[in-house]
Length: 307
Image (tube, rainbow, N blue to C red; front, side):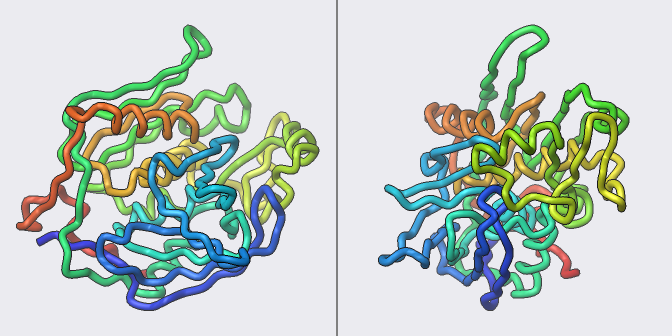
């Protein structure tokens, strides 16, 4: 049986929110089979649980936000991406503010935290969402078009293409394909950092955003070049970060996907629209398990290696 996974022990981190600038403590705890991933706002007078699911997403401006009533958690996508990359099914995320800490701007710190706590299998089958027919969402037309698509595939493959018309971005790789069957998430994707432009920072900060951002947790560019002294971690770090984000956004559906995802200039909003479009068509997907782990797609059966 291909089994569900959780943590062996709890682990903690402290950081600041990218947009809020608030100090936040994060505690990742093991959870029982079929719990899913649940964020818990422990700073509120009465702690509130916010289960991760497509319908929980209430804001997609610059990040993915999930909510239950008035309780919110912003910027969940990097932690969710790490959980997707390591195959974590069940997890409690205790958080003391309304935004997940940005840490180094990538998912690698979350990968380290999860692997340090240890990943263990549980006595319950891992449930996948298998896509049965193509589903696509798009916006705009001509030069302004952007789109995202899911297609049937025995495994999990993501293809992303960016277009920013900026010298520093244009000089790097514009398209990446990552397949869980032959790639290693921690090595190939997890270290790609979020990025932004100095011309946008003033506007964002005037709107209460990017208050915790800086060169230690983001790639920052002026009109011509990357300002970070250490440069890029990958030759195609910008588009790899879009893959990282997409993996986190799509894992909000609550189960790993068996599908090929492809996108052009997509973002958090369109990724969530794609999930909702999939779930709205009962004949577009099915829930499957693998009694024989050998029949599962490559890349899902083996536990990811430790650091």
